Length: 139
Length: 139
DNA sequence: TCCTACAATGGACTAAGTCCAAGTCAAGTG
DNA sequence: CACTTGACTTGGACTTAGTCCATTGTAGGA
Image (cartoon, rainbow over all chains, first blue to last red; front, top):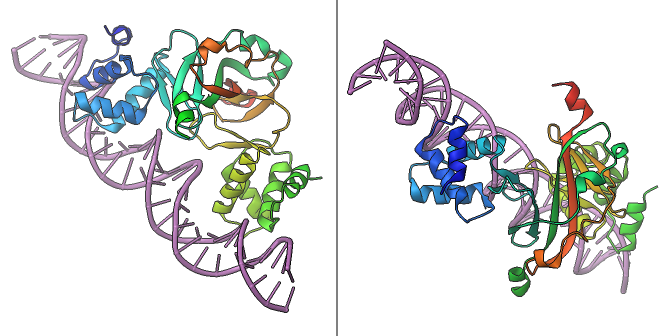
């Protein structure tokens, strides 16, 4: 069930109860959780887990490239376990909900080299903003 | 010299020394300042100006559409006075510096309606990430 | 010049995240 | 299996960026 866990183990991660729990939470069908939401769900499975550990673990998974960090505003960062299929995001300006989307086109190819200012460009992120049906209804 | 100031005045803004100073700071050639940088520069011109006022003023300019708010990470938001020419951003993953870029293509048209999930999509933001020449040199 | 509604102030407060010294434990070794 | 060790976890203090609010100040119309 847990591909994510398998991949992490394969990378020589020391497996602890805390890390397993965090990986399980991310691997569930709850996408785009904030660090605090991850912590809350982790606590349900392992009551003693600390906030710092959740932050550490998420940070490690991000730097291993197993999870993507999405910061669309000044609110909390969200964590996207769907790191192995390229995609972009559609976010609700009101409630902050995020959905994965797969637009056509290749924005990376659209940036001419005379617009790169000497940067080594490694990544593009496309964020669509709007109002979700839910928030549109209650306003 | 200050188009921004003129536009704001034209919208019936009550003109105060503080607002003038904030507008002047943004209108200079210092693009993509953080709120704190705006405050620091404003203080140089008007020592008594408070942080709260800078935040208020920036917030108002954003909701009037005269200035764009850019949040590329969990660091401070940055303010882009170049609101009237559509553009996207190239940001340095190390130091956070931002440059305006004008890629080809129309990402808005690339999002098919069956990928919109009932959202009213109003805006797209493309963010290229990489390392700036400066940070590449000192690493 | 006077009034008054709008704006500015600054200090307390909050949210999200980072840091660190001390304690704990997974897993390799004999 | 028991030991050992360095990687991991803990929780509380700290930081950063920003918001809130009661009070004081002032731009601009009458």
